[in-house]
Every structure is written in structure tokens, then in C-alpha cells.
Amino acid sequence: MMKKSLLIFLFSGISASASAQKNKWSPWIMPEAGIVAGALNPAADFRLTTGMRLKQLSLGAGVAFDEYRDHSYPIYLQARWQMKWRKWKPFVFSSAGYNIRSGTDTIFTWFGNRAQTYRGGLYAEAGVGLTISIRKKERLFISISQSYKRSSSTFQDFRWLGPGNTVTVPTTEVYRMNRMGLRVGWKFGK
Image 1 (cartoon, rainbow, N blue to C red):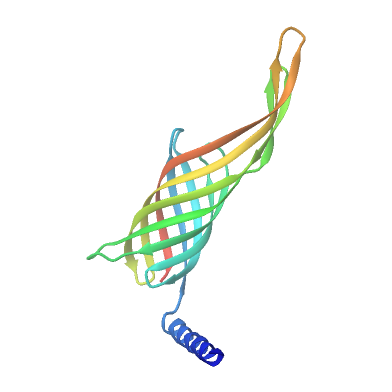
Image 2: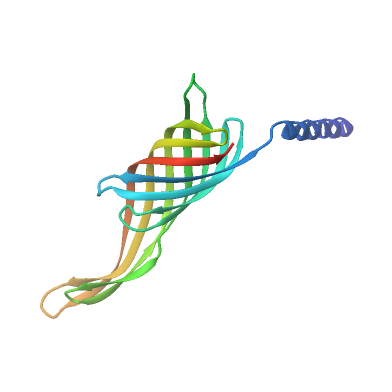
């Protein structure tokens, strides 16, 4: 039984190795620029994603500069599946990661200054798009997506309880931002 299991293991390893040589992963990099809009005013969104592609599947990682509500820097992993339909090349994609938002601001209030500390949170996105071939290894991407960005702020809030009586209360505000995005990207690589 042990010899049979070892033989099956070796055979599957050899066939996987042969398959990997036959189906090579190719690298790519894609800068994107776009606009995101939700309950607040539209804002700019810039990102750079890089990864590897095997046939229709692209896996990658990226970083973005997102100005929606506050300046933040999402870092994410992305999976993209490209289909071919006649002359069109539509794709679906999904990203998940962490929204980096940090820093401290001083807020002026009636009762004095208060320090407000910011933190990041979850970042997630799903969308669809279309690929337009420009040259052999260059492609234009147009995509529309729904994304979620979370951040929070913590501060000491002043509560007035009557003349001469104020207390400070630790307060945390959590911001959950759902928004639509429209982006254009230029992909270099296969």
C-alpha cells in the first residue's frame, strides 16, 4: 500500500511539473486611474496592480491611493478571470485587503482642542470590465466595480451636563463606505 501511494505521489508530481513547464505563468503590471462615487462627492482613485497570468486567470497584488472621504492607501490581493466572446474580452475581478488610514488631527471645539486618531480597516471590491487589445503585449482595460472601504476615528468627546459640568467620553466613529468605481487601466505584459 505504501509503495502504491508513493508511486501515485511521484507520478502526480512529475505530471504537475510537466504541466507547469507547458503552461507558463507570465508577469504583468497595470496602472489604473478612475473615479469613485457613493453618498459623498466623487473622488479620484489611483492604483497599481502587478501579478502573474496563466491563460484566463490573473492573480496579483496592488496598492491604491483613494481620496474618497479621507486619504487612504488600500493594499489588496486580486483575482481576475478573463473570458473571450467573439471580438470582445470581458472579465470579472475581485479584490480584498486592508485599507491603511492613520494619523492624528487636532480638532478645535467649544470646550478646547481634541486629538482625533484614525485607523484603517477592511477593503473589498468586485467588478466587471472589458479588455481592448492595443498592441501585442499592451491592453486597455475599462472596469466598473462596487467597493467597500472601512476606517475609524477615536477621540475624547466633551459632553456638557449643565453649567460648569463637562465630562470627556471616549468615542469611536466607524465609517463604512460603499461606492461605485469607474476606472481605466493600461496593462503591460501578456
